[in-house]
Image (cartoon, rainbow over all chains, first blue to last red; front, top):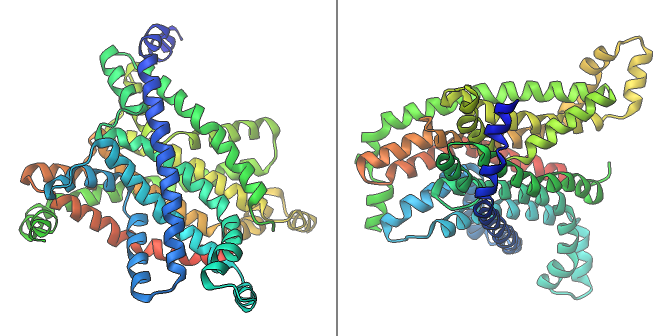
Length: 223
Length: 221
């Protein structure tokens, strides 16, 4: 027991690395906020573009969206950070990680919004158009409000999953929670910073996981 | 254009590093074949136990599921691989990765199966029990077949995510596909192996992604 306390909950060590770890906490939070906002907005824009049903454009979009859903985010991140510099595109590690996760969330969000748009009954389109509202007007003020409502539960889950994905950024040396925890552990020769890191993740995600159940109950389809 | 072909689609390099990447792919497959079935079975077990509505047991099961879903799999992996040796528990990279992915995957599978079981009305339970089936028989022969059918799309989604998550094993130097590609990149000073690894993931997982899109859209419509 004493050993467990000494190695995993060593207050001396935790106290020493707390300020540094809180810095990592902020990096994780700001990356997550950027990714969630940019990814969801990007996905919505793509879904709206897809509603215009321009054939070649849609095929291209489906292909790219599928690619970002099929390839692991860590592979995308490593590619952006380590491969793109060979063709003259060097991004900072924070930018590379944020860009990769944003693209992944954008792909998932597009798919979710599109499923929402197609699930709105055709009659709604016809009724709105017959009152003289234009295509874009119908889409924005009649279809999207209903589609977005349907999209909220799966989108919440996706946003949480992608926020967890910020931990992958540690691999390309972004100084977020787990990256700093690993260096602190190596310096202190004591894994308490790892436990501190785990606790910081719990502070972010435990409410989110609980909250997603609430969202599911509030916005989910009633059977 | 020339630079892109030279650096991302260099055929000579593909041929040169192909055996290394293939070995990596096999190790990825090994990891998937261990983690997905074991995770699914344990998830089903968790959901089954949950359906018996034993209060103290359910408190433990919910804690298990919610706690593990709250941690990114990479965090679990680092805790296991770098944190446990201090207690003299030294797991090889494969075991550590498999354990982390299993803990993460089984909690999601458990939550999905639980939702499936709860989607079946109480009338089914009562009808089956009244014909003389035991609780376990009712669950096995009446509830689960319907429950599982109801949650096929999320099951497939979770399986896809779990397969993709095996790439984190590269972080603890387990030479699966991504790690092999990084090693190959270092050997040839050219990022083509990374592109090839991404393409391999894409080609193998694309069918699953397509099927999932269909399934999800049919579910909403």
